[in-house]
Picture 1 (tube, rainbow, N blue to C red):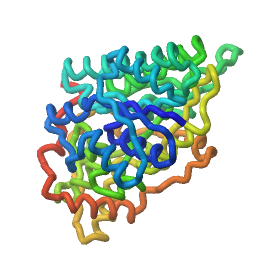
Picture 2 (spheres, one colour):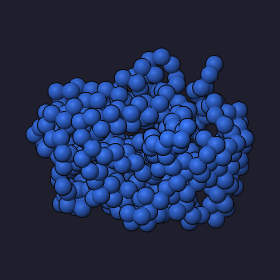
Picture 3 (spheres, rainbow, N blue to C red):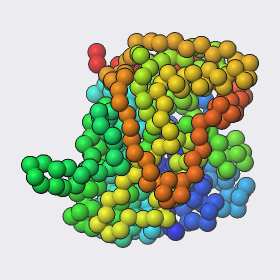
Length: 383
């Protein structure tokens, strides 16, 4: 296939670009380095210094013989995006190009405005660039399980059958996002659903849980091909953050009671899910939705699992509860259905003690890069 990756410099975008190119697809990856810029501005740089996107692509090609085309530019500029859709004529577009941090989106007005403007404008520009230039192109958009919130009922895969006053219909599952960032993802879904049913687009929306990991088949070739790895309070997902804290000897910071449950998956499984979505595309005028996770844990369980992994390496990992900077339910029901991707062939990589210990070993190689001031929460949901 001919595939465009939007947000190709990101934690997921870069491994996806390599994975698809290695499998023989023609890949164009686009980014404007906004995540790198925001990370510097907010003192949230990653553990590892990654080469820029063009250098990464050159290193990848030198090691594999596979080419990744690169374009640097702002996808809020419709002419820029449309030009690449028109010239490349993709069979599919994988859309990662959004400001991905919930804490950043609640830091202040400017950060909130940027999150809203960037995320919705890029999605809307993509829709129109496809409509005008390649309407049969399949859009694979990364959603988030955070769109659903934590309802006191089972979370279905995107849709809910409702009976009301003797009549039945099928609707998007009710959304109750817990941050402005997650709210923009809800609006993405609504935008896409409108254009799917009105203009016959083909869209797959992947409701992804928090991702952890560094290792992929391609990144294992050379450390310069590693994805960015954030451990801070703004861009760092909880598993990656806890692993760095364990190595640094900083007690794992559990927010509040620690009963918050989420659905997690390994970075390798994200690549599997994207591949499965691309090879099982939505039909014309169809919005496919999959819940993209492999297992669920409370924050306390995650901390205890990392504590166990630390013991296998002779690391004494402490756990400490701190005041929760977020406005969220700290104990709640959570039962998301996630059979769709399994039925398509997803083979999960589970979060075993060995997997966590191997990640911890990797972090130990970069221990001198850890800045403990980046770990503790700097953003509160309400003043």
